[in-house]
Image 1 (cartoon, rainbow, N blue to C red):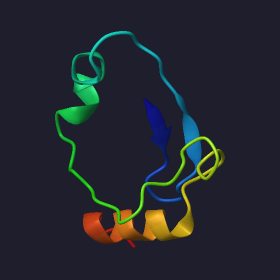
Image 2 (image 1 turned 120 degrees about the horizontal axis):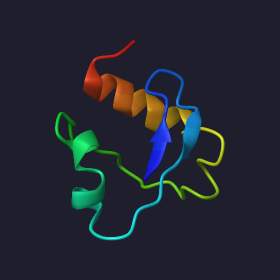
Image 3 (image 1 turned 30 degrees about the vertical axis):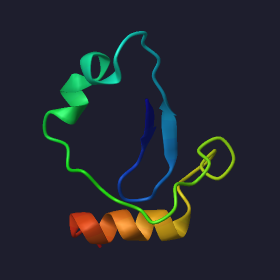
Length: 66
């Protein structure tokens, strides 16, 4: 699982676990909100240090964050 700061989009790190994602990271999904983007960025290339601005802006808009 990759984590990013919700306000800045800065990449925070990866967490690894074997098995089904929903079972391993369910505590993060419990209060989650599904967000949508038009184009999936390449996480290894485009999001190495932070989310691209257009992705972060879209997520903030969907979450009503400034």
